[in-house]
Amino acid sequence: MKRKIVADSSCDIFEVTDIPFQSVPLTISTDERSFVDDEKLDINEMLDYLQKYNGRSFTACPSVEAWLSAFAGAEEIFVVTITSNLSGAFNSANTAAQLYKESNPDCKIHIFDTYSTGPEMRMLIEKLAELAQTDKSFEKICQEAGKYLKFTRLFFALESFRNLANNGRINKTVAKLAGVLGIRIVATASREGTIEITDKCRGERNTVRAFLSHLKEAGFTGGKVYIAHCKNNPFAETVSNAIKGLYPKAKIKIYELRGLCSFYAEKGGLLLGCECNKAY
Ligand code: X90
Image (cartoon, rainbow, N blue to C red; front, side):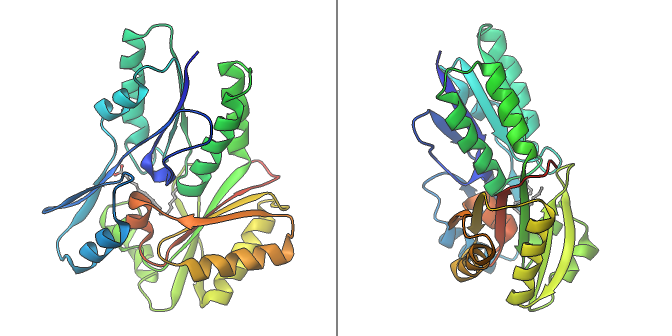
């Protein structure tokens, strides 16, 4: 059978090892320009343009057609989406799955609503890639991957919530807290897949401390940690070193966010996904 993993572009990756994978782009737009969140997108150029642009900016989830063309030809499809509570991606993927099954009655599709995004999504995709290469059945893989997702978490620290607030993804009064210079807001993806603010931190050191305390609370004991940032490699390194100091066995990867996550996380933003020992 032809297995394939398909995810929306908020996962920030374009390939996984040894299995067909496709990222289906969201778009970031102003009234004058549109950016497709694919491999060709120049993130620096997008951020610079948006910084200078005074009008409204907004995003759109993949269309049903875009999902359908990513499914084409596959027989067992694992779909991974950004939280259905902040995006229509999960819904459009569902509609596409129904249509695809009508014309391909023997095919199997499972859609994982991650109730999260970014690095936590990437972790699930890579787990699926591992599982999909075994001779385990489709159902067994879905069950194991679903369990894996319960044992991963997303924490993040942003310097600005402007784009999230302007697009109705977070309360405006809460967003104002983050507008204060030097203040980082630390938050987590809630169980419902919404943004749950946990700390207001002044300075990097306090932000790192907040991350470490959330990791401990979540039951992190030194597994995988993915740190994805928007133009803030030094802070990503700082967080990584602090984690290594306490958990020498942690397997940490640092990389840059792509278009959709960069738009909402904004310059300086950092998203951290990790494997934990406690179910969430
Ligand atoms: O459908 C669309 O237009 C996309 C809307 C996405 C809105 C949220 C994106 C968040 C990206 C910022 C911090 C992580 C939030 C985690 C929430 C569970 C990254």
